[in-house]
Length: 131
Image (tube, rainbow, N blue to C red; front, side, top):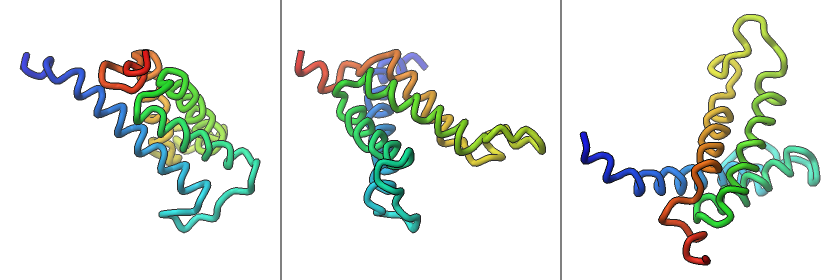
């Protein structure tokens, strides 16, 4: 299985780029109503700002520009999303579990972006080209 260690950097770059790409589409849905049936949030509301963070931070993480800051902000946004919109302090009937309250994606994004913030952009990122 040693051959897998040679794939570490390209795999990390792919994970960073794909996570950012998928995250930015949540912002596209919220801000522009594309690819969704949900109504767009009111301008300057908390969900509207969340959509802006998703769009901008997703794009930045995807291309590896300002990666640590963008990923840290995205991680915090997902922590807020989970506790405010999914968990809602409901502990009965196992509702605190992400599988039960629909918060799995928020939890995964939170920890993936926290890992990206801690590890940095990686070798294959725009941050490295601009240094």
